[in-house]
Image 1 (cartoon, helix red, strand yellow):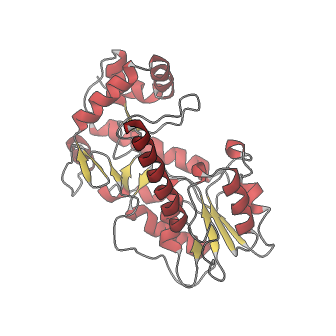
Image 2 (cartoon, helix red, strand yellow; image 1 turned 90 degrees about the vertical axis):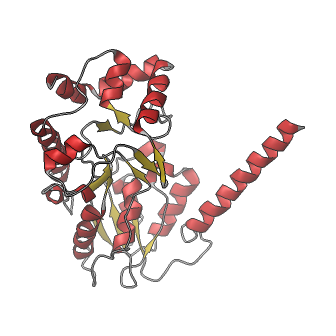
Image 3 (cartoon, one colour; image 1 turned 180 degrees about the horizontal axis):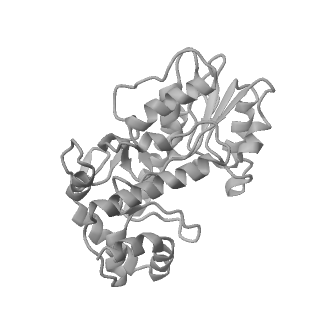
Length: 313
């Protein structure tokens, strides 16, 4: 009986989550009318933040789920939405992404002929978190526990590789420049808006994690998108930190490397709760120990960063 009660509770929670999701994306699901002249912003977790800073009465934009959350019915719904859209802002997406017609060219094909399209980069910057990687491993879709990021020092410990706990400023700067160089490389493939220059000088508001930019990036990037769309108005400051539900540690040696006007933060902050970095480390060490094949895949993907840290020893 207790098991049945637990299952019913789980089903109820799932139902509540579905209802909340539909309410959050009401215009996307057709439960509320889309505003006249609407556009759409498509991409990863950064896309909603971009929508937030460009959306205004002059430039309305429908909130949609992140592209990696879309299922087949959602993809069909997105194409119907694009059929009436006045603009599309999108990160580059390969054709048939996750087996769905979500590629940039495929999305363009559903737009009216007069619609504007602006392509923007997906941003990663390691200058504030030179120990961190976010990985998408198709063979291992499960994220690590507590936070969905891999720390090179924890990975090294799991494999028995000796590396230092911190890097000298020159190494931190080199990792940051590698991030900028990779972003410039992708921008040079023909994107309409660039972001690589926004990461110099380095300030603490540039990034919450390696793949979550801060307001210091989103606001000027939003200005560039509005301008590229030829729209009136400017970017909208929401008056709060953007994409800030997860904040990685800002370590003292990183603060020193950039001479930041910020206090070091040794622990994670997730949804407003502090999670000690030591707790995350132990959870990840156990996670790797129980999944040797996954650890091998992580090591393979992180080899360049592991080598950088090992060379600094």
